[in-house]
Image (cartoon, rainbow, N blue to C red):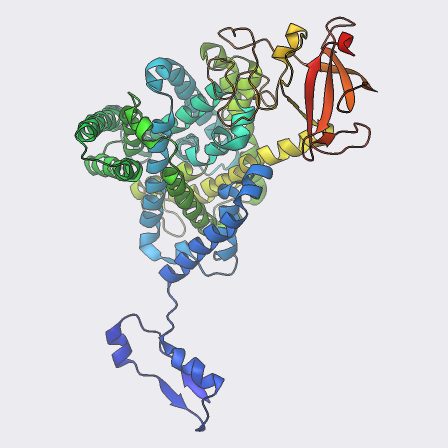
Length: 602
């Protein structure tokens, strides 16, 4: 049997495009006849996109706890990998770059929506009136770091790609200056961040990633103006008036005014019983889209406007109180992030990473990525961290410098730059066209490398810790016996000390000793902390011995650096099975020390 199927897109097409059948007749209704009846099957790009997005979210959700809380891999890395698989260089079912002249506009708007909702959420989730107290630190941290990386990486880029002028290199580097708030969330949210990264570092990194997304506009603007304008004076004039005064300043003020206005309106509506809890949650999405709609319509900086609106609407804490413990905003973020990084994975132009026409090859791109990782943020933060009170040591500065991932924001700014550049010919007729042709291949490769490196930094770190120490120690105060005072300062597992070497109490920003609300540990009757938190204390294992009457083997531990004084003993329990642990053979990663007591109590 020969079957001719026609793909229809509408009912009228179906009516005018009949199915033509030829072949031997049969009285029996065979499998082929069944397939023929399924002529209504329509394969379309939107349908395949829905299958890819929905299928990934459903599949990832089934193992999300294992992947995110045990392996510390989030949807950013996995979504990108899945996008590559279903994209044009994989099974070729989702191909954004085949959408013709609309591709760049669709890319721009997808990234805009994801960034706007993410930046609005960052503003809302910062502590109450955070910007009032930390605006100076944020300004010191953001502007010099962005400017340094912008200038230095542009010089490296011009050396690697000689056909690019320094101004063109500045334009490409402008796309890479902002820190991606979506990827950055891997170390500012979640179980690992809460346990190992001090709250003050998480907050300043979140605020920085939001602020420098919006501040990428003036860095891009001066590069574009110098590229397309014939007069340097005209370019600088437009950059100051349009890039700074109109886009940045107006965008920030507009977002703050809108956020404050809606905050007051919601308080009035709430006091009169006009608004329910669900409507508060809906503002996460609705207000962010409304804000970027107004800002982009008048040509202001929509990303800064969204961040400012989020900060303003939660300024007095009323909005946070109404949305506390609600997970719907996280669900919105999760679905949008999955869709966005699937899109990015399918959008990556792998064939352009080895282009003889534009003098681009993979080795040059790899060298560029290494230079960006080393020079873009780390040197500047190591110099200026002493002027940022939230960063108290060079280790914290190094950590903050490393975690400056590039992702959604870089793709967004590159798509925005293409809208302002001429369409390139083959071969490019001038520098502006050459810039337009090489901008996204370079930016997209750096984005891919950043997703892999920054997305997998935490899993590799935890693997490294596992090699050196198979036992994590958790202190539980199960007795009220007299013990040396220093044991009250011993680092516990719920304190973020493993990465940056700073002791803080859970989520408390200024060193409070209050345990995390998620902790099941008994609170210590510890002395008051100082402004910078309690003094860090490490322990040294002196001996492992049986203690008569104890729950099992016990460690004799002492304060690091001391010889014989201030010893204390603790019972050792395998917390996973709640049985006494054998330290010589037990390989469990969850060993608990209990019943702290002085040696004299044996």
